[in-house]
Amino acid sequence: MNRERQERRLIRRMLNLSTAHLPQHLSTPGGLDRVAGVVAHTTDVGFLLWVPDDPDESAHAMADPVPDVVLAIQRYART
Image 1 (tube, rainbow, N blue to C red):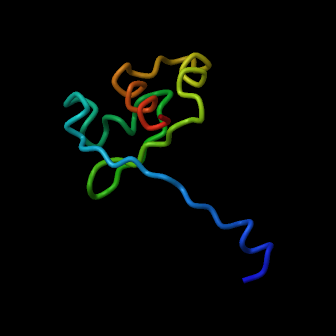
Image 2 (spheres, helix red, strand yellow):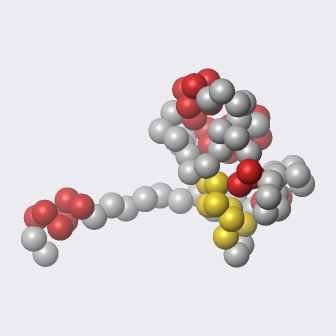
């Protein structure tokens, strides 16, 4: 494999959590994926949640507050 192609390859870490960690109003389609300030996509088994490099900085930069439970998950994912 050439060097340029190797440099483009990324390995991303994933944290797999049950939606049981979320309040019911966030744990179903139309919940977490509709919250302002949160980037989440519905999948067949729950959600794919994007976690910013610095969850606290990102949460403070948002006009809409990130729910505390989501911020806690984002912080945990970055540890």
